[in-house]
Image 1: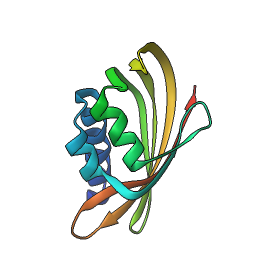
Image 2 (image 1 turned 180 degrees about the vertical axis):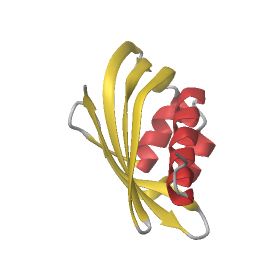
Image 3 (image 1 turned 90 degrees about the vertical axis):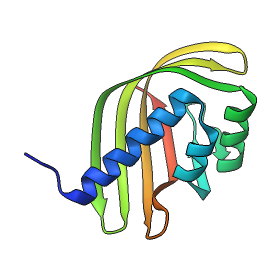
Image 4 (image 1 turned 60 degrees about the vertical axis):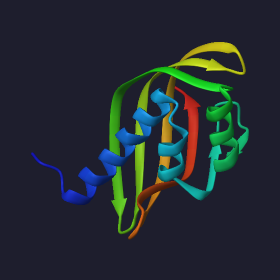
Length: 125
């Protein structure tokens, strides 16, 4: 059964975000992350959009693998939430990691910019 167009658009944005993470593409991430972004990492620390982009640009945060196991979506008008479960590998601050994680991302739809992440929470699964 086909998903409604708005859900398809949000899933496509989520998958573009995953691809940008894997590629370390800070320009694509800049387009997909709202300037007001607050993300809470698996360690409980908060990160802003600028901090996240700086980590990707500097090589502090490098994602080498991202395997999606589940991806669900919830829509309420111009707000959407994606629920990702998967394995993420890479390095952070020079230390390798390999973790099964859950990402909950809250997206807002901007008429000019499309879907953008405004809040995220990442936890071990």
